[in-house]
Length: 129
Image (cartoon, rainbow, N blue to C red; front, side, top):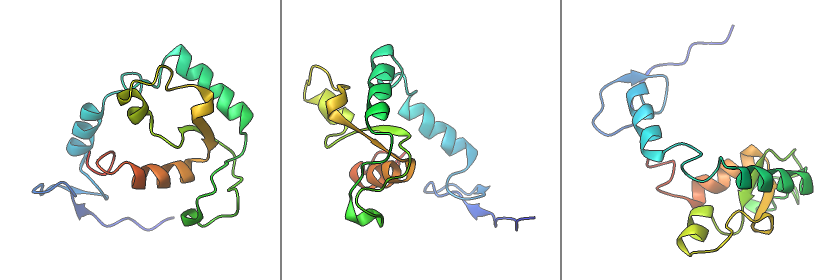
């Protein structure tokens, strides 16, 4: 049996609610509503699903080579995420790129490498929500 995790105060400024870490349920729900669904952010349509499949077929193992991720060159874990690289999808859309989901704009990466990259390259993204 694993030990119980201590309750902490919600990390949202000024919120006194106790939770098991991070934000309380109310603030998690608020953040998700502000962020919108995957489909509303462009990650649910037929074009996206086809591009994702193409990228993960091309890169079945994580191709991340970021030396800050503490792994070999390249990582080599199974790819689970089709990651826009080197530009983020929102930046491609903002620049008016006609096909931001073209497979040549993406790479296959594992969840750990994707989360580390997104956590540092998209400040104000998840950290602020």
